[in-house]
Length: 222
Image 1 (cartoon, helix red, strand yellow):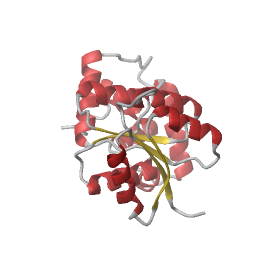
Image 2 (spheres, rainbow, N blue to C red):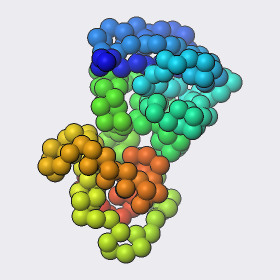
Image 3 (spheres, helix red, strand yellow):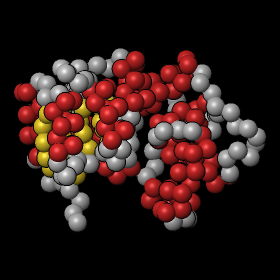
Image 4 (tube, rainbow, N blue to C red):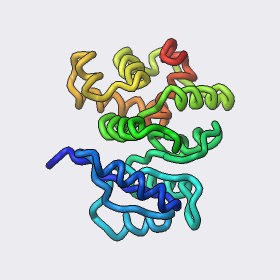
């Protein structure tokens, strides 16, 4: 078992797609296992091949099946695969929509190669990665829509769960949280699963949203 991160690049612009693949293949720990020009090609590959990627770099605007719809399908059928949106669209609505349907990170195509590699490695390590810009959009989206969930009572979350949630909001990995709280990584995973169940959140973004709504992560976003 090695630490190679398997990647699929999905983009209908051939030159851009090939450029990204060439760039990433230069990294020793990254491997491009497939390229697709639309969501349909991507889904077909995943359904007919056992060699699945760890991460998919997903464009939004593509023919046949676009990035948003493809992300919905993958989240349902292949939930273990992490999706990074890599697109030229940086409007708040596109960002909020992709995070909501299951993307674990969002990058604009004018990002630097360093930003791209960093994002891939962070997602592989932590399962998600939100820049300050993306976190700001998530926060504003929450404050605009006000979809507040009830706490039921003051003991809805345990003290330890709140500690774990705050560290998740600081984008700490499972191992980092375990080290800081002097507990095992498995215990951290247990607390995170409990948080997802209690808050009815579908992913890490949902936990961050919950923390914002309930003033739990006060001071984590400027």
